[in-house]
Length: 390
Image 1 (cartoon, helix red, strand yellow):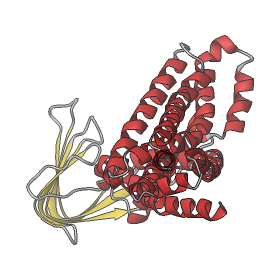
Image 2: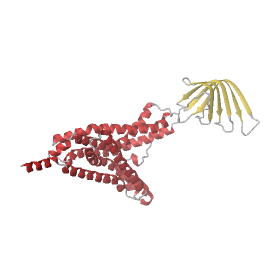
Image 3: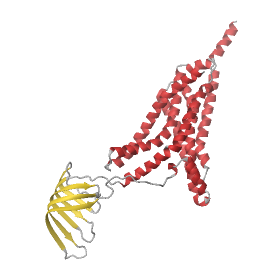
Image 4: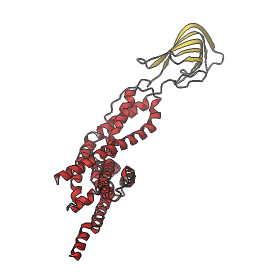
C-alpha cells in the first residue's frame, strides 16, 4: 500500500508545480499589464521595478497554491482513470477513499505551510509592497524633452526649445516661462542651454548662453525689466524626482499576522460601538488567513472525483473546471467579506461558507463516484456468469 501511496504522490507533484508556475505567471503578467504603464514613466531603475513585482508575488502565491492543488488533483486522477489504473486498483480491493488518504495528508501539509506563509511572510511582503507603492507614487516622472513642444512637467515653469539633443540634454533656441514668483512673471530666452539634474539639490541646473531675461510686475503696469546676458544659471526646483525609500510604522489588517490582529481586536472591543466595522474587518482577515489554506483540502476532495469522471480531458478540462470552481469559491469569499463588513453575517460564516459549500460538493461527488464504480463492478458480474455455467 505504501508503494501505491508513493506512486500517487509522485503522480501529483509534477502537475502541481506545473500548474502553480503557470497560474502564478498568468496572475503576475496580468499585474504587469496593469501596473507597468503606471510605473515605467517614473524613471525607476530595474531593481526597484523588480522589487515591486517580487513583493506582490506573496499574495499571488497565496492564491495560486489552492488553485494548483485542484488542477494537479484532477490531472493525477484523470490520468490514472484514463489508463484504467483506478479500475485495476479497485479490482485489488483499494477504494477511492483509500487512494485519497495520502493525497489529503499531502494537502494538509500544504495547508499548514500556507497558514505559516500567510502569518509570517505575507503580512511583511504586503507591508513592504504598500510602502514601496507609496514611494513610487510620490516619485515624479522623469523629464521628457521633446523639440518644438511646451514642457510643463516642472512646477511653475514651462520650457520650449526648437532643438533638443536627447543624449546630452543640450537645447537650442529655448524659452523658459518662470512663474515661481506670482507678482513677477519672467520670460527667459537663450540661444542655447545645457540641462543638468543635480540629485543632491533635487533640482535642475539650466546653464544658459547668449540670451535675455524679461521681467514684469503684475501690480505695476509701468514696470518692465530687460536684462541681456552671455552666460546665466537658472536653478529649477524638482522635488521627488529622486526615488527614496520611506519607512512606515502603520500596518493595515493585511499587513498583520492573525495573533497581532487578535490582540488589536481585544483592544477595540473595549469600545465595540465605535470600532464595530474595524473589528469585523480584522476578524474577516483573520479567518481568511486560515480558510484559504484549508481550501487545499476542499479542492482535493473536488478534484479527485472530477478527475475520475473527466479522465480524457487532460490539462484543458482540468484547467477549465478548476477555474470554474475557483471562481465560485472566490465569488462567495468576496461576497461574504462584503456582507461581514456590513455586519449582515458573521466573519466566520463569511470566510468558511465557501469551504463548507464546495467541501460538501466534493464529498457528494466522491460518494457518487464510488457508487458508480461499484455499479460497474465487472469482476462481480463475471463471477455471476461463471456460477451460472457451472
